[in-house]
Image 1 (cartoon, rainbow, N blue to C red):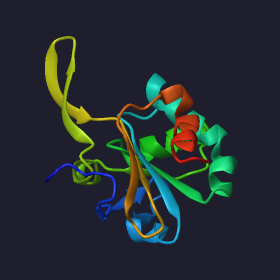
Image 2: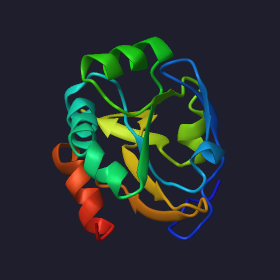
Image 3: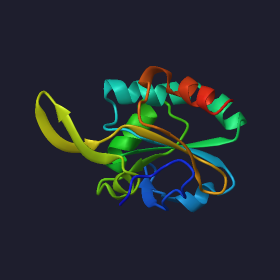
Length: 154
């Protein structure tokens, strides 16, 4: 698949959220969606990112944004993460990496000189019609909500 760019239609997706509900892109039609991909629930960077979005959730919601987090964790692990940090938005369990791959958020990474496949921390802002409005590949985990709000002129 070619790399997604701003202005392109967002790939449709379907998956199961942490509460067992089927979630798809069409569920967010008419809303702006912040779709954020993170490597692993309940790890320091991912927790900082999710909590940044949680802390600004009312402001984001008031500006018309819905949020959906995606990682390759199981629904149980996603549910535990959401409950532990009181996250007010659903988390998608993408254990087969289908959504991650469709959005180019799964790929080659390096750590300690070893190459492996994993989640490329990325956030997409998708407009009300399903078009990619903004892509964040350099996510500031501790200040991600501010990063999004500033970039979107909110």
